[in-house]
Image 1 (cartoon, rainbow, N blue to C red):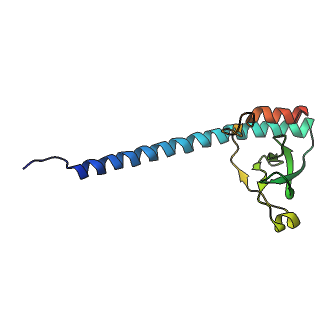
Image 2 (tube, helix red, strand yellow; image 1 turned 180 degrees about the horizontal axis):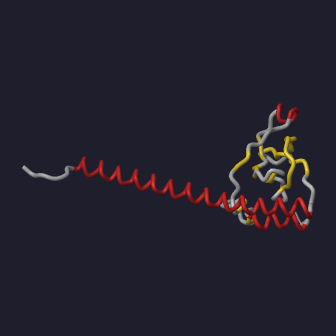
Image 3 (tube, rainbow, N blue to C red; image 1 turned 90 degrees about the horizontal axis):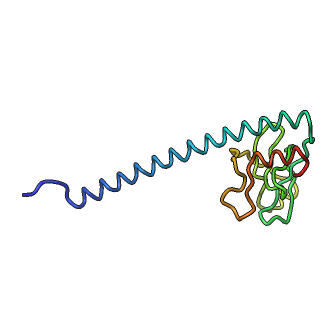
Length: 146
């Protein structure tokens, strides 16, 4: 009689190792995203201080339809961080992706976007030319280039 692991025991151990590795990867990703959002929050807070002193004044924020053909009212005021109006920050420093599906209710009543954790790079992973550092986007708003 032989002792040791059989093929099933080895496969189970391998699966458990993969599960543990995936969980560790997920924890690291969440920690990295949390740290990024905290750093972005510091940039936004500094932006708000400067904007309150040196302007520009906040504007009503509108949400874009997914196909970019329509704009919907929102209850938000703030500043657009991309020229296409797809993202913005409100006067309380909350970051928003300003897109919504087209619907009759959205056309009539508007939409209520939910805030998102702010990234350090807006549009990261998108098409070439679609991403911009948050710091650059905020500076563009302050200098009137946005």
